[in-house]
Amino acid sequence: MKSGYQGFEAKWHDLFWEAEEAPSEVPLLEKFLEAREGKSLYVGSGSGRLLGPLVQSGHEVAGLEISSEMVALSREKYPDAEVIEGSLQEHDEGRYGSVLIPAFTFQLFEDPQRQLQRLREMTDHLYLTLFFPWAELSGDLPRNAWYFDRKITLPSGEIGELETRHRIKEQTGSLIRKHRYTSKDVTGKIIRREETEQRLRFFTDVALKNLLKKTGWQIEKEINNLGDGDEDDLVYVATLYLKGV
Image 1: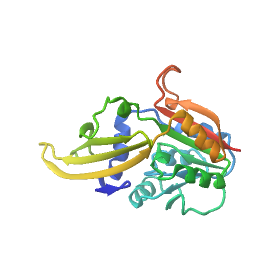
Image 2: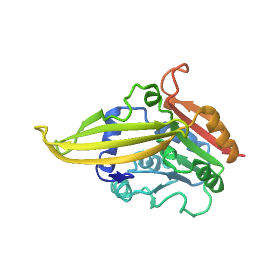
Image 3: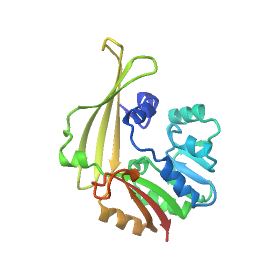
Image 4: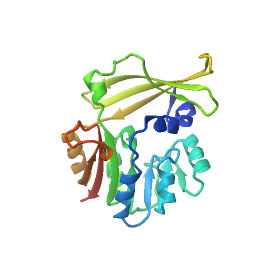
């Protein structure tokens, strides 16, 4: 069992995102950065999927990534984008004009309150994207059972499959997800299989606002579902522009 973005989870990450055809966060990030001055830090910059385009557009952004495999992928694909290998808690390079945490990375933090306090020491402006697991809570996805998630064709011609299994602790706002990655040849024969586990935090609207208030943040702007869809749609993704108070 692997933890963090390693192995297939790192190598296939961008391929799965591309196959989803979901709205990109790049326009929201650029809009946020246009109104902020100074160098920005992108926490959890991963393979450079969002960091690279921001740097190519002329924004002064450095990445911070804990996975050495993701750092290597980012540096290979976007050599002009600065990436620092390490964790947020250990990062100590002064203050930034803003900090970016898109793509639900914040929900992987073990102690959200402590990290928000740490972020408040680093900047007055924070970009944050969170998701709420409606499908898991409503029972649309089976609990404690493997289910097919998605499939891709790899550059090698092999098939990459992802299965997911989850359980929820509603009292503590925790979603524990296991991922099973399987590579198969063209005949369907299994070549290799890897499993990973993630523990994500999720927040009700009231709990999130209380947490932000405790840690010195206020919501400056909120964008639902990455700006895609109607205002009356169920909010499954919330992007927040936060300002320190």
